[in-house]
Each structure stands twice: as C-alpha cells, then as structure tokens.
Length: 260
Image (cartoon, rainbow, N blue to C red; front, top):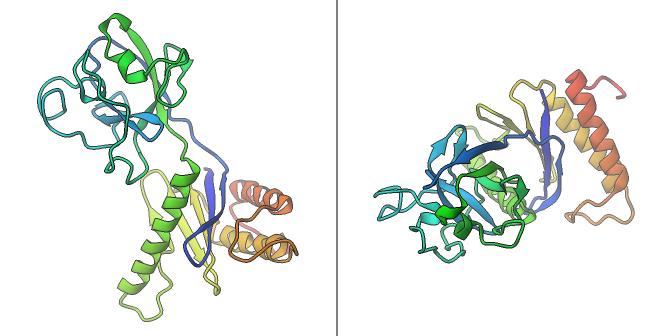
C-alpha cells in the first residue's frame, strides 16, 4: 500500500501545493529490430508512444490513419518512413492534454534528454535509420511537468464543480472519490473552498482521516505563517516536514488517533 501524491488547490482552481510522495516504477526495456513496431511521435519535449502496445508498453495518443500510420501499413517511428522524418514538433491537438502513455527514457542504456539522444541526435531520426538496429529502448511513464500539474488541477476543479451541479441532492459537496484499478483519488474541500487531493493505492486505508490531518497541518503551518498570503503557493519548510511525516504515519497505521 502507498500514498502517491498530494495536491492542494485553491478556490479558483489554481494549484498552490503539490508533493510526489511515492512514484512507482513502470519502466520496460526491450531490444527491437527494424522496423520498430510502435509508432513514436514528439510531444512537448518528449518522444512518446503514439500507437501500439507490446510487453506492457502502451501508447498515449491516437495516430492518424494513412500510409506509414497505424491505419495503413508499417508503423514507422514518428509515423514517417525511413528517410522521411517528420519535423519534431507537437501539433495543437497533441499539446492539448498531458500524455498518459509511455515515453522513450533511454536508448542503448544512455538516458535521452527530451527529444535527443545522449550524443545530441534526434531520437526519431536515430530510430528511423536501419543501420542503428538492433537497438535497446527503455520506455516508462514520464513525470508530469509543472505546467501539466497546473492543468490537471484546474481540470479537476472544473469536474468537481460539474459533479456538484449534476448531483440530484441539493447542496452536494462535489467529487469526493474517483476510483481506478491502480489508484484512488480522494478529495476534501474546506468551507473556504480549498481542496486537498490525495492519490493513493486502492487498498490504502485511513485516507479520510489523512485528508483532515493535512487540513490541520495547513491551518497550523501555512495559515498561521505571517509570511503566507492566502490563495498563493505554499512554500513553508515546516509544512513540508509535517506533511511528509503524516503521509508516513498514514501508510503504516492507516489512521490517526487523538492528538496525533
């Protein structure tokens, strides 16, 4: 059991605090022969799997059908045939939402830097050259950028409001929990509109008491800090320390007793 991350969202939907407590590893490294049987495309500053699935490696985007694409013929890296590499730019539709699939993390044991190999070559051009095969590629879930976290916090704020309005019960508080097969999202909103969001393992117990404990820590170490301004990002060492301690206690005990 584990607690993955904590988000604090202000009443306007802005992200004012985020902590990654535990990030599970989901890396997969495989050796490929030419041609690569996955479609890769540039997205922001990464190269992601756009289409295809193999050995747990999954795509994030829907590839367009056509020659060299998933809908017609061979799935070349970047959607282009060898010698016809597409420009390494993400289209407007690609940049609309954070990628949720796997990205290229390393090639032949060397970490990639964004969309370039360790020696500065373009990843898509490198993988479109038959002379570079066989090649070992490590795929994994990329860590969300700061902008992506801001976007997701704003999206959840809107979904929370929609859930409240759609409820048949008058005065519904909004979304309190979202459940998937790999994690649960728990949310607690205060009377002033601050949302505390925790992402945890579905089997993790005591999240309701943890959310209220986080609210208590926020009240003690953020609101009582004379240098903190309401609705602004939380930058307080004591808040960080006590929050991490609370997460560790919750993971081990699953709840908080009186005076904890």
